Amino acid sequence: VMVAGWATEDGVAETIRSEYEKSGYLLDPHTAVGLRVYQDYRKKSEDHTYTVLASTASPFKFAQNVLLAIQGERYQNCDSWEALKILSDFTGWEIPNSLKGLREKQAQEVHRCSPGEITDYLLNVGRNTV
Image (cartoon, rainbow, N blue to C red; front, side, top):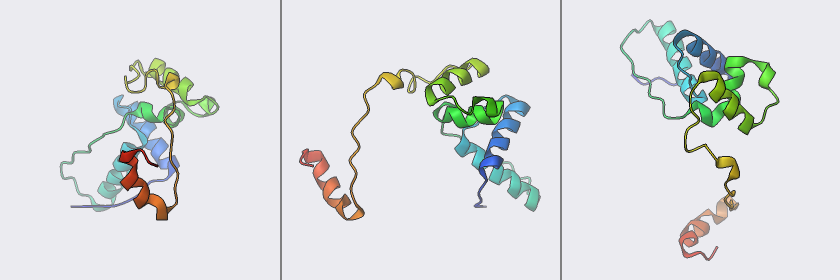
């Protein structure tokens, strides 16, 4: 069975919060959307087929949103870097290596182009002629 659905931002936050309170598992927002859609489907269809929900993102990648979901508005004004530390301290989970030290790394250049320029850009990017 393939089912599609969506969740509001409030619904995502509620799913993150309730799952963390219930099981101690910290969902990232993308996985929370999937779980919310599944829960809505299951409630509406009464389908109790065993289901696996695969999570591929770290909640630390979305630390501000996840922190707001589980701790509320008191962290509304913290920045991304503060949110990583607070989330780690709160959960006892270590910040993933891929995010540690990210603040100190040099930002990569981002090339912007119009849709009509994409093909030329992609063909030339490997040649360093862009």
